[in-house]
Image (tube, rainbow, N blue to C red; front, side, top):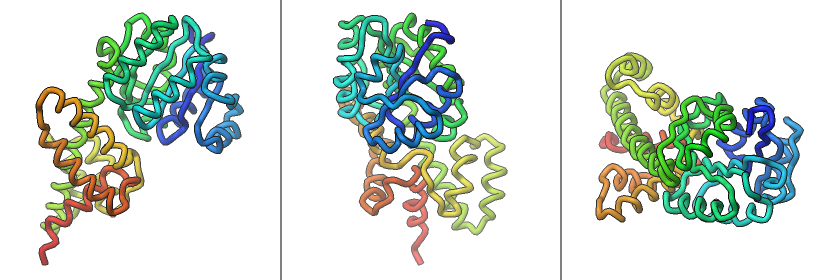
Length: 294
């Protein structure tokens, strides 16, 4: 499977899937797309002229590699069921969703019976990374399968790490999401504190970004959150879903993760208040309340 001959189909044209598909199209790899909401596939067709498959099985028949990007375990399992009639030996399914490691293992075992490869390859880097083709990709699956699919992953990501067998990509993404939760708490709480102290927030963000506390979230989301702008790079409701996965994994080990528990509680309040479709930096709304004692 070489760069020139590889054909790719993308299922799921949401906030992450659409820009990944765009980069695959620009690389000359994309052969077909399918989305549950057909209007999104129509928009993509209007820009790139790529085939709109009639269903997942049709897309699978047309492509060597099928890349999926959906929201939840149940959605992914439904997509795999729909793909099966169109899959045949030698094809590869690459899933970039965030799901339970056990779900990835189950899918890998099902596809192996057909002679198909499977990679659980969740991504990190937000919508910006998806648009720029600079995502970090955490891959679980056979090393040989990864090498065959590498031209596809190179078109959407900058850092590709093989983490071991199927399921390990998802386990690594869980690590990432726990860290994101902690960073979100630290940054939003610190900036709420800075605002309460009457500090010039733009200067705080600039100087702190250049020191030991500097991080991507502060640099990219700090300026927008202090302006009360929460356009999603990563929707709060999706991070909530991912952290529920982390909680379930920890509970299987009899462990409670305090950062995860606290984040789920505060996200739940924001979701109930109607902010679930905002960026995760909307946690700033909760942190500012700490100082509203007047």
